[in-house]
Length: 547
Image 1 (tube, rainbow, N blue to C red):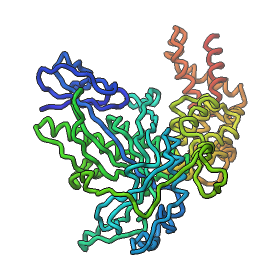
Image 2: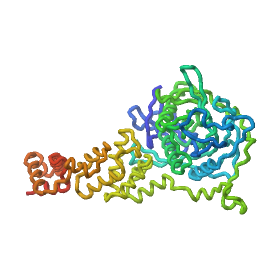
Image 3: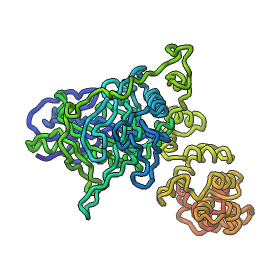
Image 4: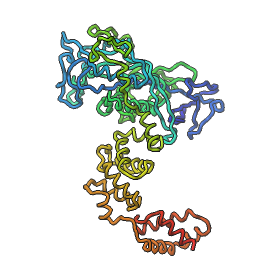
């Protein structure tokens, strides 16, 4: 059966298939039940008998806590280290070893819970979750199943409408809970020797699992929500959240159903470590499930993996039922007790407790607040504030340039986003790796403001600065002779020569077509190699054409 799929407002996938006469049913939670034809045009269900599908996406995100040591042992946490060199007796699950809770990990979880508008439980419990893998020496993971450290929060994020940054809509996903738990070790598969090697350096590293309710409906929304969470974690310092280093891993739960019907059987796509792959995996899984159901098949409650090379999800194993984990209270850890200012006993040593209010008072400005301040302080567009924060270090770069140049921030942002950022992306460089420092760019922009060079010449200077030869903008201007022509008589002669050679354009301008004047300005700039002040050129041309 032929399928039609397209992105609607906010990039939301809407699917529709020919199913005979069937009246439209309102979509739950405000999701519009709309269908798309083969050309991507909106079709009203009541007019064509198309029945839309509603995709449902929930996420489980594992964020590695920024801490010098592991959650329950004193072993060092380090991304690159020789295999099995950072393993304590407890990490290796030797008999008789006991867990000792890391205070830093608790504080990071509380901080994250507060930033995500959660209720922080003053009493939370640890549990054992049993499953048997070679990289889990104890045969169980210490987690928080019954009473996690934080519950009932929310996260607001923004998505573009039709991929236009100027048209953004804010959405909210509910946070079910945040729980502390151990990471497992790492299995390294050697296919040539048909063996698997185990590295326990990661075993016992502290994780925060952030469980998001199924409030999303496409890959774009899922990726946007995770990106906003990533920015929050990095702002707080509770996690470095570098996905390439496995510090932020996402499990996506995906299902589809018809509007008005119960949610369908879900599948879980495990261990996605890229925002781009997350969006692709979710969208692929939505389409796969709908095609499967339309062909008369059934969706299995299974765990799948995303193959980035093939661009599809592949089965891993049947989804383990909840009772298979055989949850039980962790006998070696007492309840985790937190305090606020009111409940803190007077004789209690503050260094031995975690005070929720104390942490709350010290929360930094979150990304949403930073964006609002950028817009208010510098008068830039809201979409520009998103770009500044999304690129690591770009906000600081922008603010450094603004403080060192006479150019207005609204003009500076154009140079940052159109010229600097495009070059960095073209050469796969980060802001910190840029050969053009904020000082050099500010120096260049000051030359424009002082009317010593034109914007056209400034772009030539910038292209030279990218070479990283240690030259200043002024050095390049003098070397390339890019200074603005100061001799007005010389400029008048060039303008007259252009006018004499463009009879048709001159006639068009005198007939009332003022837009043609821009062509003459461009020709003058070409003659002067960008060394003419365009404002002055326009004035001279207008004067001569009016004579």
